[in-house]
Image (cartoon, rainbow, N blue to C red; front, side, top):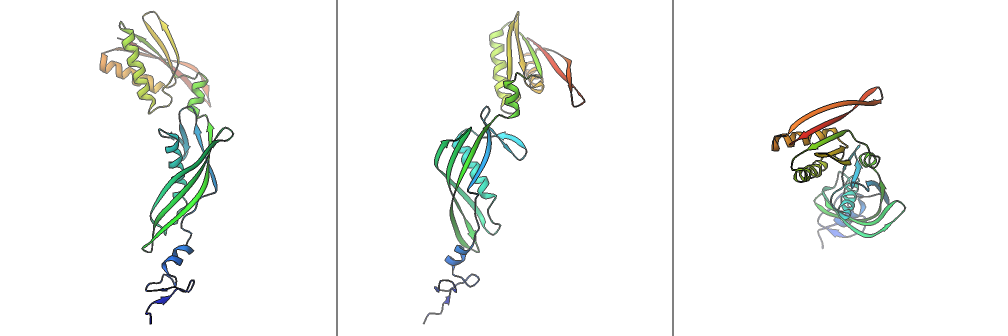
Amino acid sequence: MSSGRFCYLCGAVTNELFKGLCGQCFIGEKELASIPPQFSVNLCNGCFRTYSSGSWVDGGESLTGFIERAARKEALSHVSKELDSPSVNVEITDMKERGKGLSAALEVQVTGTTSGLEYKKTLTTVLQINNVTCPGCSRRSGGYYEAVVQLRSEHLDDTSAKFHEQIDRLYGKDKQAFIVGETTVKGGVDFKLGSAKAAKALAAYFKSHFKAEIKETASLVGRKEGNDIYRITVLIRI
């Protein structure tokens, strides 16, 4: 005669019960993972940044990678504290354009352990990606600028190439570091930049690496919410 105990739900005989249930019924009764049938995220179609936790952050290098990270984050936010070492795997089963964005059908598998038992659940959801324009890209398209950099050099082609190279580098950290205007003048080029901080960083770079002469001035261009708004002009002479 078996010395095991009976699962009160399915009647299976087992040597170990979990609150009166066999392992399979115990796991089956628990709702340790879930995900909404549909959720949405905003993604800037200009710079591929997404709005998260009150700020705009880098969306990554690929759309599929972004979708997988967004779904993983959403699933983990609905995992029960009873599930130990949760892991989420995401598969994109379908993707199509929808309105001003994309709709991605996803299969989300959540795994982990609870009470020493393996837990696995497959969920389905739809991620709606809304194509929006972040404040930085909106300013860029509107011709907004905070600084004018007057680049003067006897070797303008090389110096200008270095300038663009540094702007690309700065843009990785400061999405306001964009050029909205570029005018060739006698002896150099005038650049309109979206970021005064970037203009100062460029001046510091050319001074450090090329011993450039730097001159900075500021002019009042208006007021906003009671505060004076200034635009700087930075002369970089090599």
